[in-house]
Image (cartoon, rainbow, N blue to C red; front, side, top):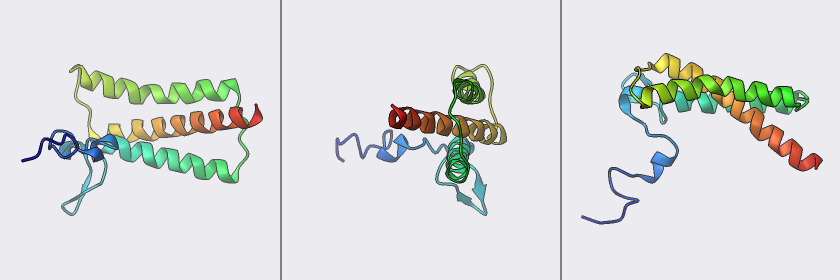
Amino acid sequence: MTNNPLIEEDFKLSNLICHRIPERTFKIKGHYFPVCSRCTGFYLGAFSYFIFAYFFYVNYTVSLIIFAILIMMPTFLDGFSQLIGLRESNNVLRLLTGLAGGVGLAILVKALKWMIIMG
């Protein structure tokens, strides 16, 4: 038995990407997704936005940044209300709020990049 916290069952380095709780993870034919439902949505949403922004010009305005923050709010509310025990979410809701959150986060990342480049 080792005392290395990076190997312990309670803390794995892979948990920094996603907690991977089985009941919060989609499963197809007995195989779990590599990340939970919310993270699946986040990754799909962000990836989709980055593809969109690659092909189409996006003008990063204050309004777009506010919009990005607003579409991230359902993700926060869903996760936080579940965390404090007000309610239990489901995987479809986690996926949908994750998609919105991923798009919002990607907009913010691209807007930050744009602000740094444009000075």
